[in-house]
Length: 222
Length: 222
DNA sequence: TCATAAACATTCCGTCTTGACGGAATGTTT
DNA sequence: AAACATTCCGTCAAGACGGAATGTTTATGA
Image (cartoon, rainbow over all chains, first blue to last red; front, side, top):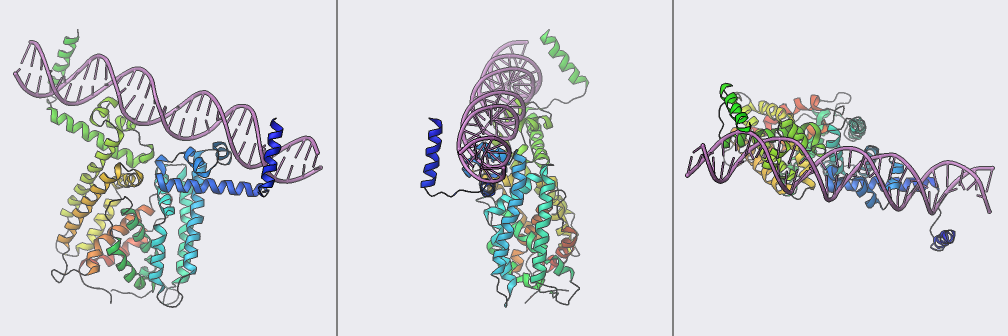
């Protein structure tokens, strides 16, 4: 009876038009589903309450499949960090590609970054960051990925907003990107808790206004 | 034998010069020890790994005493939020009291805040913030305390750096404190993970330099 | 087509955490 | 000093989580 059931199953599959997937495809899909579910879980319930079982359920997979690809929670989370980098960088590049090339691109860049840090993906990023802070095993992985991410961002910034004079950037210009980043991150961190204070309405216009003076390379004060 | 032992105990106490503590004192000391241990635990091992047992050990108390004062982990954590506010505000006021009254106080204020967010206390604060983000029970408590904290800070700022003209602060001046806060918080968040990138060396001088123009109330750009 | 390995599923156990309980010790009031 | 209230302590059970062992299905190559 068992082999008959299996044959039936196969026939049903064939009739339903489901394609035969290659091994690499199966693996890639499964891992992607698990990693997406991990990110979703981190963003929604936070790192503390994130359980591997919950991730498996959200991914629509069995716990066994999960444990096959990621033998431990540590490996799952470590891989999720890389996955997060890819997602955030892709979002960033997509948005940058639509930047207006002529006029003041600086305020537009501010809005791009502001939107980026307001995505749930960034909440998951913060969850992992706080986890890595006290997790000796996760810290090196996270630090490495973070370093790669910011260097990519810095490169994009340098191409889009080169220093004015030529080869000698002012300290203000060099610090522009990190300052902008820090401000937006700090702003979104402060309004992270629902019901808490929110300064973005009053702060963001000012940030949009003063950022061009940093990025244009001219000294706006002395 | 039991009463004898008790009497001996009392005698030892008297000889050892230990003062008789009133009930209120006992309670206050015990609760303070537990809350301090909670903050210490949050800062060191993070919220995810913080256990009530660990807190009790660090406080030098038994689990029973802990559960007497804080029947659940939720209550312990909720009370710790209040405790954190008191500690941070006290640290802030202490530092502000030593501010130079004559010269440029703005850079000094920047350093005070920078030192404040680099304390372990602030790490505990961030841990609770991330926890409150996804904890429906903790969120209102945290949001309330956070609102109180920032309003106190804003008041202090307004007294120390009143708007120039008189009663009409510019948008830049109104946003100065939140922007400064956000930047420092974002900066410290980014370098939270050991081994990660650290922009503070290049960013902080610039922040120190430009902050006075915000706080002085003069418009530094057209 | 069949053998083999990769991919996936099911079940179970050891460990850890929470918080509930009874009882002991201490402080306070009469 | 005696009765009462408060504070503190050790033990225990229930539940959740991670991950190991084992069984089943799917793909690939000869």
